[in-house]
Each structure stands twice: as structure tokens, then as C-alpha cells.
Length: 125
Image 1 (cartoon, helix red, strand yellow):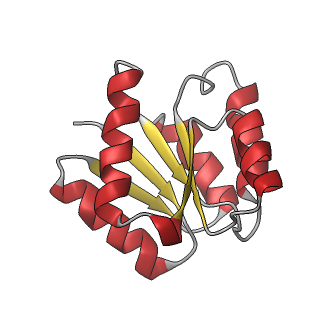
Image 2: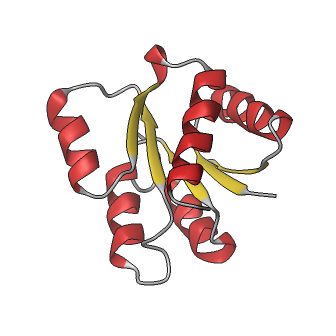
């Protein structure tokens, strides 16, 4: 069973994504802030990370940079899942190594699960 880590501070959203992923056959873990999220990435080594950008304790860009700079973690696909939709933010996220940049308002949870499956398949995970 593929393990997905959701780093999201909104309990309603994280629960909604976790439920949708679990229903689709994934194991879903949730981290409520950036610091805990980074610790969980290191401990769990999930198959994919869904990462919000605006988070307490450490923002998503910082987490993404730390994941991609770590030899043990850098191959874990990271999907930025955020409401920040400015072109500069999208470019920053992708340049830091995000596999995908999803704006929450434009994607249903079901569409996010489809995207997760696509990325896992593309990376042969």
C-alpha cells in the first residue's frame, strides 16, 4: 500500500484529503505543521508528499528545499497543494523541485487523487 503524507494545517482539508486517499487504496498520514511534517517525511519516507505552502512553524517552500537537498529524501515526489496561485509562487515551487503545483480551489479532492496516481505511475512507485 502506497503511503501518502499530507502536510496541511487545516484539519478539515487534511481530513478530507486523507479520507479520499484512503478510499482510493492509499495509506494516508497527516502532519498539522511544517516542523512535524518534515520530521514525518524523514521518519516515514512516504511514497509521495502533498504539501501546503502556508504552514505554521515552517513554510512549504522551506520543507520542499530540505527534502530535495537530502540524499535520502530527494527522490520522494512532492506535490504542492496550496491556494497561492501567483505565477512567481508557482515558478518558485517548481524550481525548488516540486513535481506538481496544484491550486486547491481549482481541483476537487478526487482530481487530486487522480494526480497523485499519475505521478506515482510516472515515477514507477
